[in-house]
Length: 449
Image (cartoon, rainbow, N blue to C red; front, side):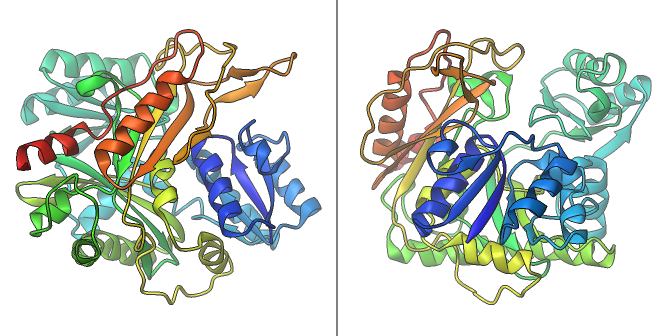
């Protein structure tokens, strides 16, 4: 199969790696790709946001399948353009992608579908937004409605902080047009879990649950980022349903428990949302990301994404036994997903992915620093997220999040240790990384023991 992979980050490197694991003979063309992807694919210098260029590339290459990684080309309507040209493509239409590109639309959709989520109000004027923040009380969440590279959510611990966030978005255009419309939202207490699904618009297939770590520093301190690491599987849902001790090796018996709990989340959240999208004439096909909060009142939705998460994908795919290419191809062709299997079932392991970020990230990431990678290590996968080659052919930093170091092991503590150790061995000036990915899970395990 010839596959066109759109994007050039860590998620796309993980997808290319997974495709090659499934079929060593697959031909991958990446646009634009990165130096890590280039070891697995032929990279073409067409930007992921250049929809005209991508349509022309597909017309020339005639791939059997196009897989879109990032959200921006989906929001720009790449799926609509490819379908009109007769090119099979995996992902939602521009109208369906609004579930991520407009948080206001997503809130309205959840209200229509009866999906539990935090109370929120839409605002475009600072004064009314500040009044709403006072009505909710601190802590309060301020969200840019549009796409902001995963950084458009500010949890304000005080009303003064909320005022600053509102002014930054609405008055100073901190996120450009993405923040011209905001949500003032009640703060939800609990623990976040990321659930990713493949869907044909009606049926769904879930991956193992994961958890992203958004804050820059250990202990969830520091500024918000696009994600400093992730781990999978996650146990809060399992523990709530009477599962085994958190942090222990996964056993076959507990996979069945997971299936039933994740299935419950799907029936409470994913199925009603897919139904509501169809009623609105926006049938959603592709990868749907549900960010959930496990609260004392049950599951509540934090947000939806219209694609696979980053860096969750880098932690999930090494645990995924089933072949994705046939499933994605079926969805792209408009076929029905018949399998009732859980995509992640079958690998009793844990994965921890540690992001290594550039100096100055997230506000002013520095590029051009020369990178030296440690020798390969069994059980460790290094996914390139923001790398390039300089004129001398050296590997250099090219974006805020540079690498995702994923380790897979039989238990969570070992996976975390391997990931952090390998990340520490990466060398470039000013690198930043967290040493505590999965710290909550490990703390639960320590308490349980």
